[in-house]
Length: 106
Image (cartoon, rainbow, N blue to C red; front, side, top):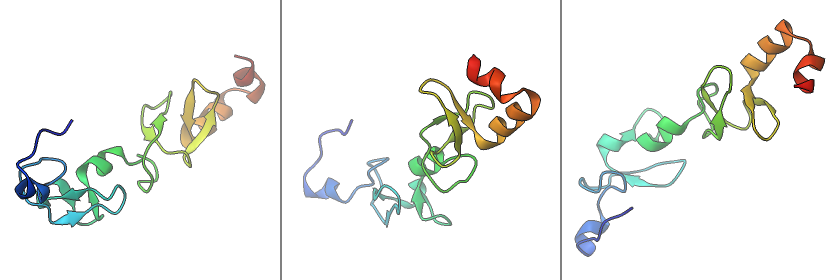
């Protein structure tokens, strides 16, 4: 939650640390951030970097794989039944170890 600001002077502060001056705009969330909270090589803020899918590293994650625990995006989600979500890599290995019928009956 943002703290009370000091008028126009705080308008130019980083939206993450609220201390340094904003120098960059994140290409994903459009936050205005300082150099310390910006990943120059990717053009995104540190918050978005931590939230990126751990498989494709392009999209923001929406959940966690039940098997490996990595955070994954919609595109990298292979199976989702409303409660359990599996990434493409884990789902393929699960299908190779067990039959499809066993998994769907659980």
